[in-house]
Every structure is written in structure tokens, then in C-alpha cells.
Length: 234
Length: 295
Ligand SMILES: Nc1ncnc2c1ncn2[C@@H]1O[C@H](COP(=O)(O)OP(=O)(O)OP(=O)(O)O)[C@@H](O)[C@H]1O
Ligand SMILES: [Mg+2]
Image (tube, rainbow over all chains, first blue to last red):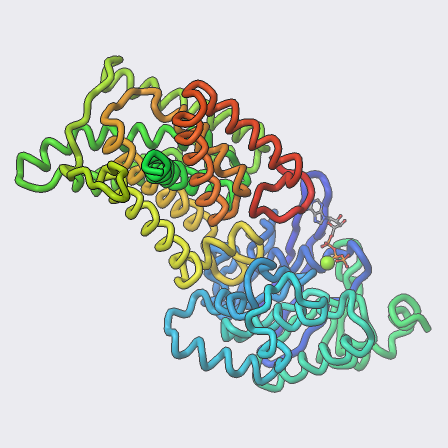
């Protein structure tokens, strides 16, 4: 479904990605784990077109993503839940969800999807008219996920959705990811919380300073000596 | 009492003109964090367009004010050209570059006007042929009430537009978070261009209101109006649409009331004084949110 090949990304003189390759198949949960500064966000931003690639390719269902305007990706079925939520702080919950469905001009369809999203996140329904900037961190994360779902994606890119959340909320976020996955949406998940990520993922890639060092089935990686030491603290 | 009422209507009329110009400043600032110093000059572009096209309208049996429709189109097109040709290439190379480009654009437009239209002021024909009416002993020009009405109607429309329509909401979303806006499928460049077009179109409407009150065009009329409208935008809270409206009305009222009740020469000093006091108390303007430094 999504294929990244020999991707190199530079920020000025800093080489953030040094030629990484990976694939995500339809229906999978694939996680990219790595420490701070490994290049997880850069990878996701390059897929979303927010950062330019220096070389390499990204293809999605056979189409060259590097040639597509970033604002067109959602129409192709690629949604992004960015690191740090990035909700529109001065807009209400409802308006944030409206923006998630920006490319859909059919008002009736938008309302139907909104109902689905509220079904998943009843707390958002209670806060429909509240400004997103005044929501708690956990609620903002729910809103960021809800907003992405409003675009009816086939694949959702989630960048550290558990960041800054209490353990209970982390559990909740991961169960939501599983729910989304069960609904037929492919998931790419950036995480530092390797334990949780490997528990729900099908496959995993380990990113270290711009290079993929280990990859494989999540269940295998969980037993991997190197991973147990570096990422699971055992 | 009758003088007061007259001053109030005049002040509100003046304020509505400033408010429409301030809206353009504020919308562009909101989206690009850039003070478009050339914005005032769109009043001039609009006013000259009306000067040249109003007689044509009349000769075809149409009312003179219909010239504003042409002015709206001309201003929007010139605004989009300025944005695409001058501002977009320097976007991302720092606020000083943007500021200098905007100042240069202002000089360019004024000098171009000088070349095209000549240095002599032009007298615009009468836009509205409306009588005076007497309310509570005050003689009030109907055209003031009319332009005031137009101003208020446009402000209400703008508010409805940015809150109730898909594109309008996108115009609010882009300044809040460009990255998130792109992710959800908003073409940020297109929204920026649209913002310029709308801001400049509003300046054309302000030009109509201005020339119906003071029927004169000069090539530098835009800079003076622009500065006052800029003050209005900052006073109300720059980047905030209702702030521009409120600021415009306040600046207009101060101008007229000081002229009538104190001395004509004092209103600028008093306007600046009030601006300074407001900014000392609330650096982000009357309706602004107090988040760090601004302006
Ligand atoms: N806009 C930028 N300009 C310059 N360097 C950047 C920029 N964004 C990221 N980098 C650098 O690129 C490298 C990879 O950063 P990236 O944000 O992709 O890491 P990450 O794996 O997402 O880390 P984290 O877990 O902390 O979010 C880092 O060295 C970072 O300093
Ligand atoms: Mg990151």
C-alpha cells in the first residue's frame, strides 16, 4: 500500500534520514520505534509532504506521493495525526472536525461521519462548542484522531499519540488505535513507547539516527535481545 | 444634542470606512503575520477606478455607485497580483524582508498612480443623490446613514462568512496552524491568495464610501487612510476580525468628536494617545488575547 524507498531528508546540513526503506501493507499496523531525534517525525512529515525529500521515493498504491500536493493527500485516503496534536486552538471541537472533513463537500455525509466520531469519543460530543485550545491534553489527542477520521482515510499516520498522557490515557489511546484498525483502516504508528507499540503492531521498524537498524514481526522484536535492552528496559 | 447626533453619525460613517480597511490589514496579518503596508493604497486604486468608471456607468443609465463592482474586481486582481508577484517569493525569508517588500510595493503603487493618473487631484462625481433628513433637530446626510449601513452589513457578512462557510473556516484555520491546515487538505497558498483578494475587495468598498463622503482622489490618499486603519486594527487587536471593526469605529468616532468638540488639529495626537494607553494596559489590543509580545 505504502512503499518508502531509499528516502534521504536533510535539514540544511543535518542529515535527518539517511536512506530508509520500508513498506506498509493494507490492513496492517506498522510501528516505527526510535529514541528522540531518530527521525520518526521527519519520516511522517515527508510522507505527508510537509517536508521535502532530498532523494528516494514514496509510492502509495503505485502513485508517486512526492509529486502530489500535500493538501491533496487526504483525498487519496492518507490522514495524519501529528505529534503534539496540532488542533486548531481558536476553533470549537465541531469546527475542528469540520476542518477534518474539509475536502468533503457533501454536508450530509460529513454529519454522518461526525456521528461516528462522537460515537467513538463521547467526551468530544459533550464539548462540541468548547474551544479546542481549552481542552485537556487527552481530549486534544482524541480530537486530533477524530479530525483525522473525519477525512475517511484508508491509512492513518499517528505520530506519538501517547506523548504526554497519563498511563490510563495511554491505554485508552492504544485501544482506540486497535478499534480504528478493526474498522479496516491501516495504521502507521510512530512511538517511543516500544512496549505498547509492539503489543498492538503487526510489524515494526527500529529507527536510529536516520537509519533503520532492525525490522521484523512485532512479536519477534519483542523477544529480540537488542530491543529488550535498548527499548524495553530489560 | 443635535450637534452630538450629527457628530455621532459622521463618526460612525468615518469609523465604518476605517473598519473596512482595517479588516484587510487584520486578515492579512492574521494569516501571514505580516503588516501589509501597501494595503492602504488599495483605497487609492479603488477610488481612481470609481473616478474613471462612475461616469461610464451613468452614461449607460446605471447608478454611479455601481462603479464599486468594477472597483472590487480591479482591487481584488491587483491585490492577488501583488501577493503572487511581490510577497510570495519573499515568504519565509523573514519579517524584515516582508516589511521592506510591502513598503516598496506601497511606493510602487503610488508612483505608478502618479504616472498613470497625473499629479492633480481628481474630483469624483456625486455617488449618491440623497437628501438631508432632520432627526431630533439634527441635520443628517442620508448618504452617511447609507454608507454606515453598507459598512455594518459587510462586517456582519464577513463574520457570517468566516464562521459559517467551509472556505471561511479554512481562512480562520490557516493562521492558527498552517501545518494542521495542510494535513486536513486545505491548500494554504490558495487561502492566502483568497485572503488578499477579499481584503483588497473590502478596500474597494471603503473607497466608495470615502469618495461619496469626500469626492476627491489623490495618489497618496491611501497612505493616510492606511495609517489610520492600521492604528484601528492594532487598537482592536490585530489579527482579530471583530477587533478591526471595533478599532475602526473607535478611531472614526475619536476623529470626528475631537474635530467638532475640541480642535480640528488635535485628533491625531489624541488617537495616538489612546492607542498608546490601550497598548500599555493591554499590549495585544482591546479584543486581543494576551499572549506574549506583539507589534
Ligand atoms: N525543522 C528542522 N530543522 C532542522 N533540524 C530538524 C528539524 N526537524 C527535525 N530536525 C532534526 O532532525 C532529526 C530528526 O528529528 P525528528 O523530529 O524526525 O525525530 P523524532 O524521531 O520524531 O524525535 P521525537 O521522538 O523527539 O519526536 C533531529 O536531529 C532533529 O534535530
Ligand atoms: Mg517526533
